[in-house]
Length: 200
Image 1 (cartoon, helix red, strand yellow):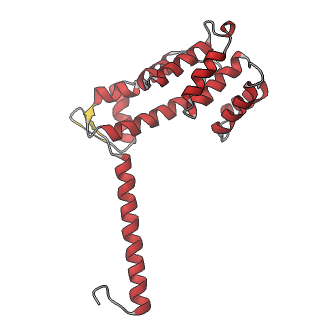
Image 2: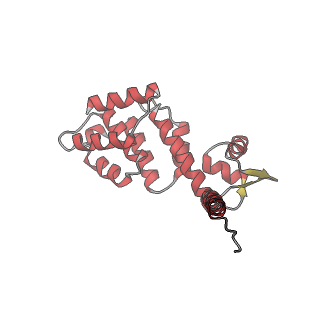
Image 3: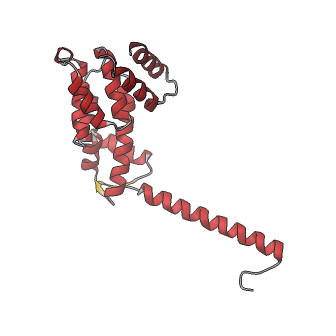
């Protein structure tokens, strides 16, 4: 377990490509036979969060001896888990932004990136518009940063409101446009090959 935790930490710190799901499976297999150290448990919990295995994280926390649960970074990591289970993502982002992370300083950024992307998808599905102030609360940032984020995402900001683009609608529209192009190409090919017109 210790070797896996160190390997994961080194890969994250170096910026190497990481398959978190694979590490989650490794942590899971090894923890069945032994209780890992507090450091390894931190990375194990994060692997649960990053792969959306929140119930697994809850069961893991119950298995951890009380001797490892005292005030520590591990305890803070579990606070994140409790908030994720309740889908309180803005509070998770606030905890990430305000706590001084030591062992988790790099992997926490991976989780923050995932949560912001999840928040983007959720807002795009749920809102046609929302106030900048509310948008900033979702992202746990100030209004200026929220406006800049909306701009990077290609969302319109006007008169204190953010107008999200529905991601699913954009994908659907792109698929429809691709299908139209494909049909046009097929029709063009048939017309050339068999000298037929669409109205013949």
